[in-house]
Image (cartoon, rainbow, N blue to C red; front, side, top):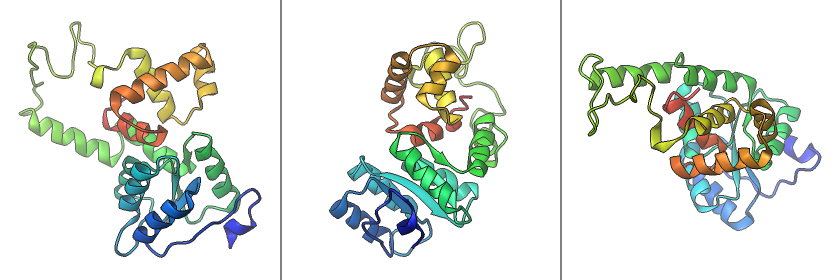
Length: 225
C-alpha cells in the first residue's frame, strides 16, 4: 500500500516467500525488489543471491526488521545494493530505490555506520575474522608466501593488497564503501569521471564483484579503508 502511493513507483508483484520472489522476477523483470529476510522455503539472502545471479539487471533492497550483523552482511554478500529496516519511512524507501537504480548504495544511516565499523575493524564480524587469522597463523606470526615474504606485507613493510589491486584502486574501493558516488570520488581524488570509471571497472574485474554492494562487502572483508 505504501509503495503504491509513492510517485514514480509501480508495484508489479508481491511474493509470499523467496521461491515465489525469484519466479516473479523472472516473469516481470522489475528494476528493484524489496526483499524481506526471514521467510519460509527460501529466505531473503538465498533469494537475493539467485536473483542477482539469474537477473543481474534487477537490484535488491532488503527491507527487514533485523539490523544485526548476522543478517546485514550475508545480505550484502549475496548482492543486495540496499538495506533498510522496517521503521523506514516512505521517503527513505523511495530514496533507496532511486539510489540503487542509479548504481549507488541504498543503505540507511545506521546500516552505513555498521558497515564502516566493520571496514575500520571495530565491528563484531571484523574482530571475529582477525581472531581466526591470528589462530591460523600460530599465535600471530605472519605466514610466508612462495617468495618468502610475510603474507600481509611487501618489501619495506607495506601491506600487500589482495587480487592484484593497485593502491589507487584500493583507494577508490574504500570511497565506494564509504557510499560516495562516482562524481564525489572524482572530486575527492581530483580526477576525471572517466578515470574513476576505469578504476572501478578494473577493481571489479580483479575482485570478481558485480556491483557496489558486493564491493562494500569485499572491502570490509579485506580491511580496505
